[in-house]
Image (tube, rainbow, N blue to C red; front, side, top):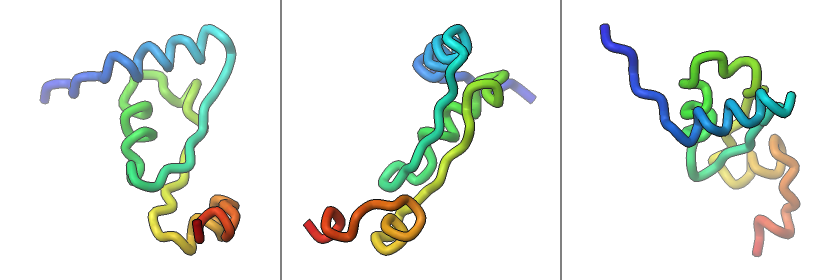
Length: 74
């Protein structure tokens, strides 16, 4: 089975984070997890990707991601 291609931007981000000893985590909504999925496709991603949460529904943005209800109402 052929290996899926790795997004070149995700690969560059992974290498930059690794070289700096940094990691990344994400809270996604409209992207529905695509950002984390793309980063996770890079070999060795566990060294730089901490994880993510998808909060698509408005009420979950407040409960799970801590987005203020005032901001959500705007």
